[in-house]
Amino acid sequence: MWFVHLEAVRPFCVEEGPEEAELQHLRRQLCLPMDEEMLVRPVLFIRFFINHYFVVVVDYEEDLMFTFGRHTTSDLAGVYSHDEEDLKQWQAQWLWLHLQRLFQWEGFSMAPNQVISVNWPQVGAFPSLSLSLR
Image 1 (cartoon, rainbow, N blue to C red):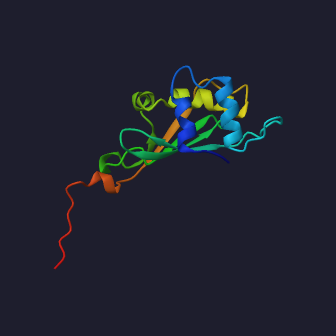
Image 2: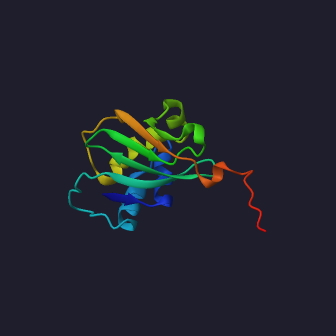
Image 3: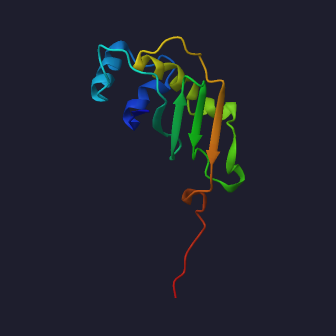
């Protein structure tokens, strides 16, 4: 599995994506091989969106994307196909498309076939919860 740190993810979240010079810089920064083929493996990264961090795993060979903890409320808890409109809000389509360029992988789809979301109630979902100690 490959890991792309939080700051490295930013240039992949826009339609134009990073320029080649920026890709080269990110490859060095991430200690990726520069002159050899990189094995296709799932890519894991943390995405920050609307004051919330969540985990994303992109699997190009299986044509799947997974999100873990994207939604924090109990009504959205569970495992289900991710909503397409929500994917566009946090720029999932650009991440899928541009991350392939970082690893110099070719021949994969322009968008994942399916995005599976795994969510659970999280601490941020309970702002009114208060504890009283006696």
